[in-house]
Image 1 (cartoon, rainbow, N blue to C red):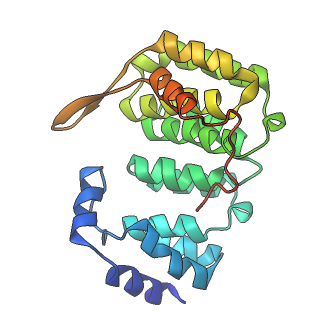
Image 2: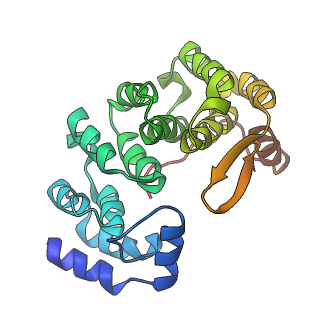
Amino acid sequence: MDFEMVMQELESLSSERIKKTYISNGAHEPLFGVATGKMKPIAKKIKINQPLAEQLYATGNYDAMYFAGIIADPMTMTEADFERWIDSAYFYMLSDYVVAVTLAETDIAQAVADKWIASGEELKMSAGWSCYCWLLGNRKDAEFSASKIAGMLDQVENTIHDSPDRTKSAMNNFMYTVAISYLPLHDKAVETAKAVGPVEIKRDKKKSSILLASENIQKELDRGKKLGFKRKYVRC
C-alpha cells in the first residue's frame, strides 16, 4: 500500500464520535477519527515501512501520525528524527503514545528521554517520563541503573506539583510504573507516591481531575497484580 491508499483507507474508517473524542482530548484538524483497533488490519498488510511512516507523520493528520508510529522502524531512526517527531507532536496522545512509544524500542531511548525530561518543555518532558514508563514496563530490570531511577523518583517528589499538567500526569505514571514493574525500587516508589499525595490536573472548560498514584498502586496489588510485571511488546 502506498501513501494515497493508506490515507484513503484511514478516511474510510472515520467515525464522527471517535473524532469528537480525540478533539476533546486535544486533537485538531486535520483528522479523520479512526479507532486504533481498526488500524491493525492495515498495519498487518504493511508491517514495517519507515519511508511511508515519515510521509504519514508529516501530514499533520492525527490518525496518519498515529498510524505512522505503528509501522515505523525505530531502529533506523536517529536522535534527530525523534527530535523532529516530538516537535510535531502537538498534544499528549502524540507525544506520549506515539513518539515516546516508538522511542522506547530503540537503543538511544534513555539518552533522548533524559534530554527531554530536562528540556523544560511540557510535552517533551511528558514524552521523556512516558518513555521511561514504556521502558520499565517492558525491559529487564538489569537494563536500568537503580540509583538513576531512585534519583528520578526524588525528582518527581520534589517537582511534580510545580510541573505543567501533562508532565504531572506522566510523572504520576512513572511512580506507578516503578512500583509495579521495577522490583528493586518498589518500596521507594510506594513511599514516594505516598509523600507526593494527590496531584491536581487542570483541564480546559472541565473540572480538575485528581491523580493519586499510591491508591492506584494499592488497587493493583489488591487485585493480585504480580510485582515485576512486564509487557511482551511496547507497541501494539
